[in-house]
Image (cartoon, rainbow, N blue to C red; front, top):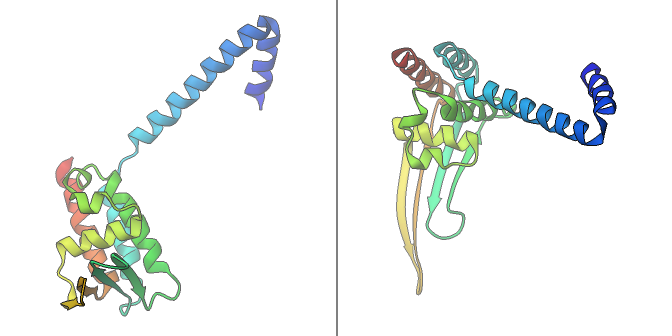
Length: 176
């Protein structure tokens, strides 16, 4: 507010054109400060360890079910037994952290990187590092179509996520 008042006085002293130039300079400086702060943000091992502790606190029965079919819904993830949606929120945070991690982001597969949903990004990352349980696959054929279906589960989502967060923390330590 004080800066706005000062700009108003300077603008009045410089005239309309001078105030436009001054406003443009201030805008450019604000954008530069914003982006320089954003680019300096990076994750540390502590961030991953804190997230691991949060994952350890969620109910052991929470799981994530994955399904894929070639016709219809494509691929999907569903959180099970997550009534408070805490596990989903933690997976969302973990998925966002993957992209900001100096040690992990460069190693992400295209399948993980390309996920537009952060929680799904995290689940795909787990799926690549940890085998799904209760896996099934099958083919269903009809006159004109053939549908391939696969499914599986990440059981003990909190425990597995915590373990992978610790691996990410170790990677951050090695990177520095």
